[in-house]
Every structure is written in structure tokens, then in C-alpha cells.
Image (cartoon, rainbow, N blue to C red; front, top):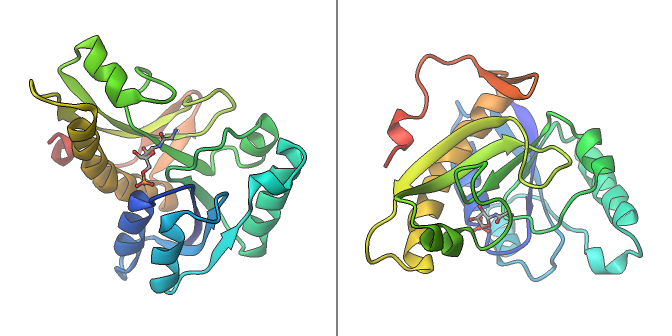
Length: 210
Ligand code: GAR
């Protein structure tokens, strides 16, 4: 199994979905540590109760982003981490970190990239009047919410949606998408080729169109 770290800042529902998936013998990833930049992240408690190692690297305790990221990097190395999964990790990472973990760093973003990079994606999707919305898992590049796409899941936008109802539908799709994309990355079936990911699977994604 590939040793992965999951980085969170808050609720950690994607982390929970990954923990559940990783319980299966056949899942190709093993979570060696959950790291949060926020000591009060609710997800930390869930991880501890699931018997997973947790670490806090509080960004407020460091003078610079680089020092914070060096501490984060040291923790990841300590656990012999091979792949890092950002799961609602709300700190921007500098090129120093993203290049160090190039092609080994995954992110989930709550929109169909390249649409709606950044924050408040559900409000902006409603504002734009799109009929289809969703989520994306991609390898991280220095530019925010950019990088080779591993997978996407789409959900409909319904006439009475509010940002909250839409967010709930998207996050349910995120849980399925992320565990599948992590499995692909950890089993070498989603390799970066130039600016894209070459998938070594016959069928992927159809079941994610919900
Ligand atoms: C998720 O919707 C994730 O896609 C988003 O934050 C939420 C975290 O929820 N990530 C970003 O916006 C990254 N910029 P969770 O803590 O319950 O997994």
C-alpha cells in the first residue's frame, strides 16, 4: 500500500471518506498521518478515534510561509509519506512546497475546473446560472487550483438550490471522487504526461455523474 498523508483545516468529511475507503484490504493507500494547520479542526478528533496518527502544524506559530511549510514537510517525511492529499486544507502553498511534492500532491476543489477557481464556488456557480456543477481532483501546481486533472464528478444545479443545498450535493460527490482518484494515483494508473493525466483505466467517471 502507498503511504499517504491527508491534510485538513476543518470538518474533514473528505478525510472521513478516505479513512473509510482505506479500511478495505484491496484499497491501494494507507493513511499514515492526518495533519492539520488548525488545532481546532473537527476532523482531528475523528481521525484519532479511527486510530490514525494526527499532527498539528499551526501556521500561526511561524514567521513565514516557508518556515511553516518546512515544518509541514518535516512531519510528512517523518511518517515516510509518499503521496499528500489536500482535503479542505485552506492554506495556499508556495512553489517551494508544491515543487518539492510535484506529481505527489493531490487537491480536491469544489467546482468543475477550470471554472470557479478560488473560494465561494457554490455561490458563484449559482450566480453564473450554470446548470451543471461539481468537483475536481487534480495534481497541484504552483498556480492556485491549477494542475493536471485526475477526475471530475458532475452534479445538477436545481432551480431551488441555495449555496448550502448545492454544497451538500457536491460534497457527497467529492467523497466518491476523491477516494477513486487517490486509488488511481496510488496504483500508478493516473500518471502525469505533460499538462495532463494519462489514465490507465478503461472506464472511469460514468458512475460519478450523479
Ligand atoms: C470541500 O468541499 C473541499 O472541496 C473544499 O473545502 C471543503 C472541505 O470539506 N476545498 C476547498 O475549497 C479548497 N480550496 P471537508 O473538510 O468536509 O472535507
